[in-house]
Length: 302
Image (cartoon, rainbow, N blue to C red; front, side):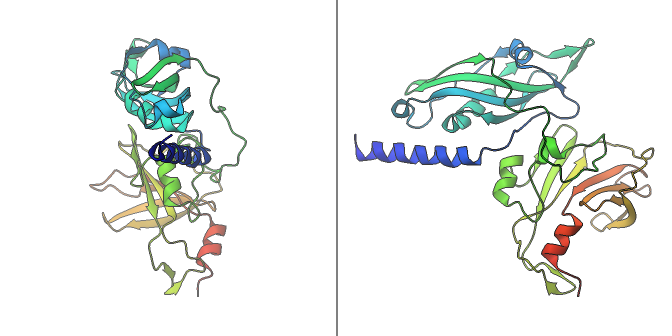
C-alpha cells in the first residue's frame, strides 16, 4: 500500500469520525404548510433520479450502507430541501447533491397540488466508477416526539419552530459551527413562508459601559424568524406568561407591541399602520436568551 493510499485512508477515516461525532440531531425539511408523507408515499412519487458520483477513496474503503434523508418537495415536484439524518458520513455530500436534482410527480390532495415532506432511504454501494443505489424502506430515523425539554415552553400553537428547525440551539451557548450544522448556513435559511436568521454576539459587548461577566463573543445571540407574507395577530390573546412592552425598530422607524416571556421568547407585532406592515401584523419572532442566562452572562446592571 502506497504512502498516498495510507494518507487518503487516514484522512477519510478522520473525516468520518468527525462527522459521525457531530451527528446528533434529527433534521427535518418539513414546513408548516407541507403535507408529511410516509417513505412509501414519497418513493411512489419519484419520477426522475440522478447518478450519485463516487466520493473520495470509494474503491479503497469499500463504502456501502443506507443513507436516510429528510426532504421537501414543492407543488411542482421540485426538491427544495435535502438534509441527512443518518448513514455513512463520507456518502453525505454526493448523495445530497444527487437528490437535489431529482424530480417528483406533483402530490395532490383534494384535487389540489401541494408541497410535501418526508424521508427517503437509499441503500448505497460505492466503487471507483460511481455509486449503485436503490430506494429502500428504513425504520424511522427519529421519533415524532421527543422527551427532551424545549427551552421555549410558551411558543404559540401556530408558531412552533424550535423543535422543528432550531433544536438544540441556545443563545449565548451555541457557537457558529453548531448554527451551521442546524440551519445549514450561518446567514440563515429561507423557507417558503419564513426567513430564519441567526444573530451573533459581537466583540466588546457591555452593559451600562461595563463588560459582560462572561465573554461569549461569536456565539449565537438570538434567532429571528420573520414571515414572508402578512400574518395578523389581532385576534391572539397572549397567555399570562407573557408581559407587554413597546419596542422600537430603529432601522425602519417602527413601533411594535412586544410580548415576551422569561425564557427569551418575544413576538414583535406592528403597533400601528406603517409602510412596513399593518397594525396587528406579526413583524418577527425572537428566540433569545432566558432571563437567568442574561444575568449569568451579562452580570448585574451597574
